[in-house]
Length: 190
Image (cartoon, rainbow, N blue to C red; front, side, top):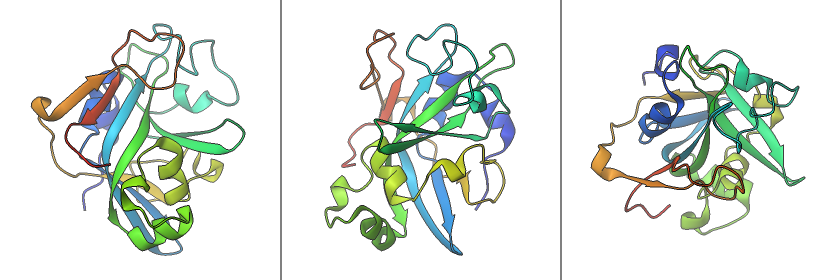
């Protein structure tokens, strides 16, 4: 189990979003590990991206996007859901993050199903709010260092080739819709 180092996140946000596919998001809860293979991501930039939370500048909510790379950015949306991101950007960019949109459950599936109160595995972690609910990710995980063995971290999984990556417009946004910054492993059931 090799944790992905901080240098991995100190690169172009879009590149990191693609490279996170196939890696493993791990959540440690009461001594138990719950994890899933990252199947879908979305990149969010800064001044070049009207759809990004950071586009209008630094706020209390989005300050993690401007902080150290390799940390988590968790936000609350629609008055009911949490979403989790990894902060990633190169040295020439002030803010950036990658939203985790879907996981393939790897360990702790029974726990995830209990947290989601469902029995349908294909509907378990196939959305950003579903995966945070399954892994019990809340504001308490805001700003965690994903490059250390904390209660939330990312370990090496498998390298996904460009031919296995489907590139699409991001989902559920109204601005910067021409950017094809949604990446997913093609031909997966999650």
